[in-house]
Image (cartoon, rainbow, N blue to C red; front, top):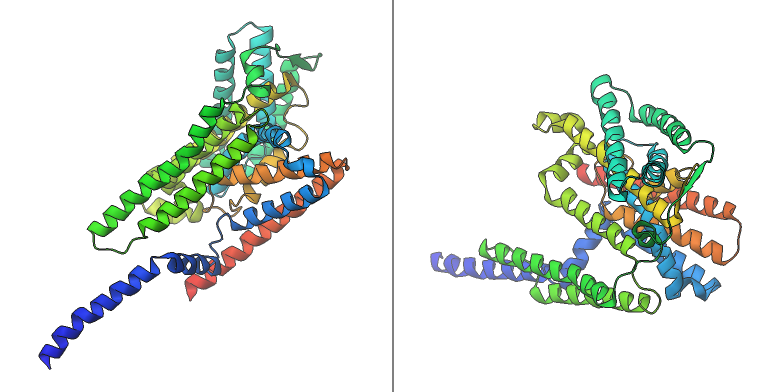
Length: 417
């Protein structure tokens, strides 16, 4: 009897190990993905599906929509509001909101025009001053929130009006300032694109980073006698992503190529994604947004986290205003007004960042602004009224919030189960 038990134990371990290896393969990955979806962890799936539908519809109505030249213009247009949306992700992560990002971006553009063109400052110094102003405004919101308990909705709404008044004041009676054509800043916003070899090299970096990270994870888990995803599956994923990105770059290079301004936006998204997912600060952001009191009791400096979120949001808004001025070659009273504010907030939410705090990704800004600009570009090509753009964008935003709400309910019920 003892011998039978001694021989059956290793056999049971072998079978368990075989099951673990099977679950770590392709089938296991699919089952794991389906389990996450059922539990409400949808990730970027809804926005990717929505983007495919939008592009399919517009392409069928006008094939020019997917032409390389139109897509390059779309990337230029995505960059300005996309950077502002990246800041919105920060405040939404902690469960707050900033309604003044449009006004801050408009004032930043006016500040650059005034200091650079009218006052003769070096353009780099004018940009630094605009970014510093953005950080100062965000710090003021954090002070009102942390010390006085003023809701961010109220403080940033007051800031929207105050900063808009400041923008109108410094622009004066002329109402606009033209930026010099041929300057580096304007060329950056309108003309500068990456050399082909640079764009192809950058397209290979995500796959290489994924491969290195995956191999390190595989080695660590094997050293600890834990199950790990197969190397073959990792190589397949890396190859698929790399080939896909290289094909996209090759297609866009048939026209002007990848704009440097869009490259800056994607670089900021990647940096923020690393900060939110791989640093103590990023984990603290998620914790504060999920449960402020629990985060405080865990030793997290909640006030510092709020300060960083608001300051980053306004700084990104100011940078977006500078890029918008470069794109339009002017700073005017209309900068930052209209739908800039709403599009930035909508992009973050449509991309997958939760309005309820604690859940989000830097890539939400990238995906969300591509959705919004795709709608705008498609309707423009079809020569349809801009009123449709507002209605469609509003409908997409409503659907995104509904999906987020249902996902939260599913996660709550799954957690109780």
